Length: 171
Image (cartoon, rainbow, N blue to C red):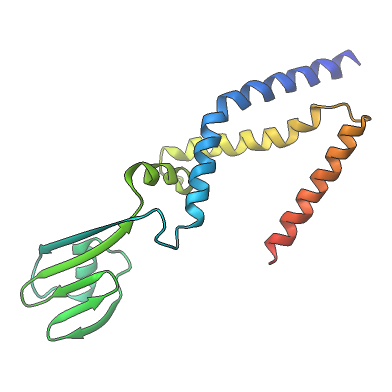
C-alpha cells in the first residue's frame, strides 16, 4: 500500500511541475494552432509585392526557382508575358511582379512549432512536448483514488472525449 501511495505522490509531483514548466509552451502551441486553422485563408496574413528585373527568356521551370515559388503554375501566356496566380513575368524585359502572402514575423515563427520536420532543431521540442502531453493524459488518472465518485465521473468524461474524437475523425 505504501509503495502505491509513493508512486502516486511522485506522479502527482511530476505532473504538477511539468505542467508549470510547459505552461508557456502550451500557450504558444494553443495560439499558433488556432492561427493554423486559418492557413488556407488570408486571415492574419500580410501581403508583400516584389517587383524586380530578373533574367530574360526564362523557361517555365527556371522561372519558379528564380522568383522563389516552388509550385509555380502558369495560367496563360500572352505577348511574351507569363500570368500566374502570384503575379506576372515578362520574358522580353525580364520584369517580374510577385505578390506573396505570409504571416507576420512573430506569428510565422510561432507556427513553425507545429510544422517542424525531423531535420529541424524544433523537432526535439515537438517530440518532448508530445511525450509530455501523453504523460499528462496517463498521469491524470493518478490525481484521484480509483474508487471515488470523481474518478468514476472522470472516466465517463474520458470516454465521452474518445467518442467525440472518433466521430469527428469520420465527419
